[in-house]
Length: 320
Ligand code: NAP
Image (tube, rainbow, N blue to C red; front, side, top):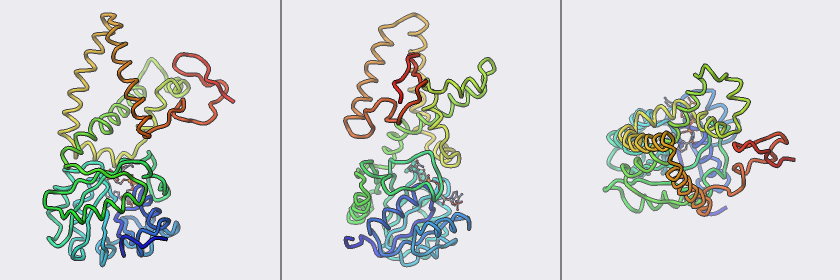
């Protein structure tokens, strides 16, 4: 075990992200103490059963008492209230951060509650799954994934660097940018794709001429990958869209324009335009694989497709 980066870390919220951080602290020895706070006694009891921390609290103020690093691991819409509840117990010099998927709204909600004697360094690990709760966490979640830190102009650089070291110790790569730029980037790489997935799965569920059983039976033909995204936590994603409204609407406007031109190309039989776009998008996929952000294996590396599995070409995928 290396020298811990912090004496005491407080994790406020212990779902997928909080428990993954807790496992990193425990397994990699990143802090001497980990105080865990969450809203519901049953979640806290589960965190205790999983030995995710060294102390367990229903009151966030109790958890942050004496902590050098406090990370809010809550839905974006709950961060302001948590900051208000714990502010009076924050230790001078403590770093306060979060993991919310939206940054500008978290800054506006949290910053007014924080005393001048703490360092606020908002953050967002670009890593996750569609699972929630303290059982969902795993130590490798952040490995080879980016964590974006969005320090404010007045944030102490040493505090940002100390937090960056913490994230690098989990295996993450760290980049800093402004909260506003983060929100714009994430709108296109994450928020709009989720909205499209929620929409397409919703549309399929509402169809009257294609039955639900057919949608499920033939889901391997592309739809299945949307259903994985559309199974993401409803509270978290409601909060993301309510709190990143401007950037999402801006990206959706661009998306709608491009969709309209695809519609036109299909209507007028403009195969060249379709082919050009599909060739450009294929190179984006290759770049993502080359950057180590996904596997090059067929079917996202899913193991052993069934013998009768088939893809969207209608051909049988080689199975066992
Ligand atoms: P999660 O698994 O659903 O856990 C949420 C935690 O927040 C639980 O401890 C829950 O407490 C608590 N909580 C929920 N609603 C609350 C409320 N209204 N007031 C106070 N506490 C509340 O969530 P998660 O996936 O870890 O996400 C946490 C944050 O990470 C979110 O801001 C999300 O945007 C961000 N994030 C998520 C992902 C992802 O893929 N999931 C990736 C990157 C960042 P109880 O169980 O006690 O109610």
